[in-house]
Length: 196
Image (cartoon, rainbow, N blue to C red; front, side, top):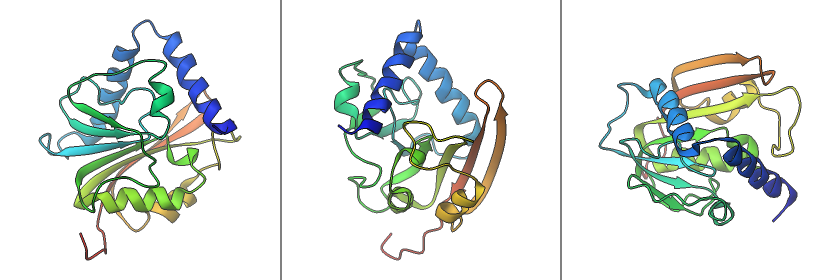
C-alpha cells in the first residue's frame, strides 16, 4: 500500500473512532447529499457510489447502490457493513467493473482528487451511467494539498473533466471550520458514445 492510501485508511479509521454512532453519521451525510437529487432520480433505479470510503452514504437509505472503493479490504478491518441496499465491491473508479450504461445515476463525492488519473475516473463514471442519467459530483476547492490528494481542484479542472455534460445544478459553499470551499454539482450524462 502506498503512502497516500495509508493516509486514506488512517483518515477513515480516525473518523470512525471519533463518532459515537458512525452508521447514523453516514446516514445523515447521505440524506444531506440526497437533497440535491430531490425529485430528480428514480428511486427504483440503481446507482453507483464511486470511492465510497469506509461505509457508503447510501447505507440505510431506500436507494439500491453498488459502492466501490479500491481500499475496501482495508476498510473491512475497521468495520463491516451488511446493509441490504448496498453491495460493496473492491474496485477502482478508474476501472469500474460494469458494462456501459449500467447505472441510472452515480455519486462521486470527494474522491476524484484522490486519484492520479482523474480523466480515467471521469470517463469511467460517464461510461457506466445511462444516457440521460445523473451524476452527483462533489470536490473540495482547497488552498493547500492534503496528504491524500493528488491535485488542487478548482472550477477550471471541474470543467475540464465534466464540461461536456449538461449542468443541472451547482453550489459552491465556504466551510469556515475547514477553511475550504465545497463544490457540488449535478450533471446529466449526455454521452456521445454510440455504444450506450
